[in-house]
Amino acid sequence: MLSDRTISFAGRSITITSHELLLIGGAILVCLLLWGALYFNRKRVVMLRRSRATDQITLELSRIADALERIANQPADKVIETAARHPQQSEPLSERSKNAAYSIFRR
Image (spheres, rainbow, N blue to C red):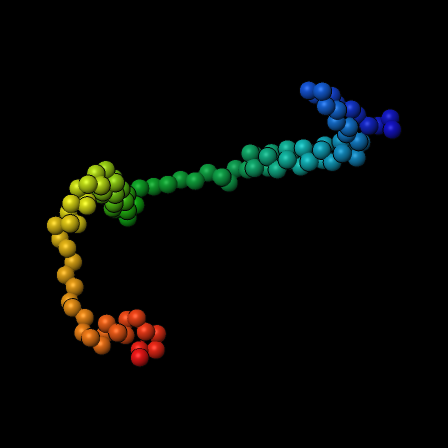
């Protein structure tokens, strides 16, 4: 057809029909209209004011972040050594509870 356009790029040929050109043009037009509507909309101004509540939240979040950074920067050997010094004590199990642990029906 005469309305088809052929574009050659890197040894490949792409044929674009007039219908595809119309759809591409329409999509570009819709995108430009949406961009213009958002760009020229004057209701997008937001004013933030400081308050005691936001200052308190900022302080608490910064303290949490500092604590997490200290924990993350500790070497793993130190954590393992601390855990090895304080083993958890467990009470010996009675005879009945030893058997019940392995049985679904406690027989």
